[in-house]
Length: 241
Image 1 (tube, rainbow, N blue to C red):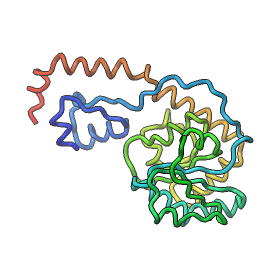
Image 2: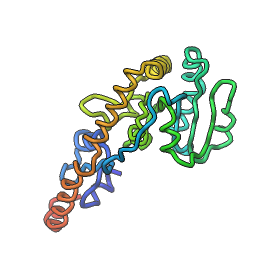
Image 3: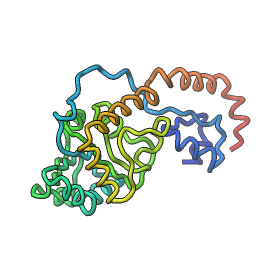
Image 4: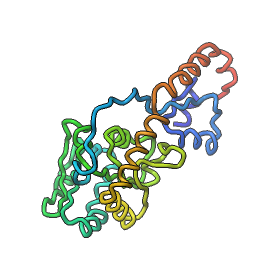
């Protein structure tokens, strides 16, 4: 990837965290990089279900993506049993494309652990849940599941890696935790505390508006692309690699 960046006139980098990593750790010249996160239009003003109208937890993500699969395993083996101890009536609905047999075998209705597979409409299933769980042990880039959750007003519990590059002024649209016990405790707290839930929902709307609104980034990105195009020969002479 680093070699490809040096071979290109400009590279669009989706994550601010990775932009800093490329510059500070790999010493990639800033002129070769352009920060271009998700560019979102103004959200529609459709009414969303409130706290009392939502129930259960949701996890969503393509099963072929390794971080998502590890997240499901961690939920099944360690985190969900801890949550069910405190919320015995709660269910976890797990959606995602391409569920393999090893995933469908985890389906345990008596435990409230439900492998749902493909979702016809991701927005609808996320909107009906009270809390999204995404205990991602590793990964990169920006996670689209959080964009969907914030747009639907669904707070989440994830890890620092999960929220990487998406916080606004250190604030998150949910709670961050790293161990199974802490993740479970955070999930139960967010599920039961309506005031905290509403606060984190509003923080999600702020993150969408401040970090990913198209009007916040499009002029800068477009200007940088035009500058590179107009100075192409000169730029290539300075990029010896």
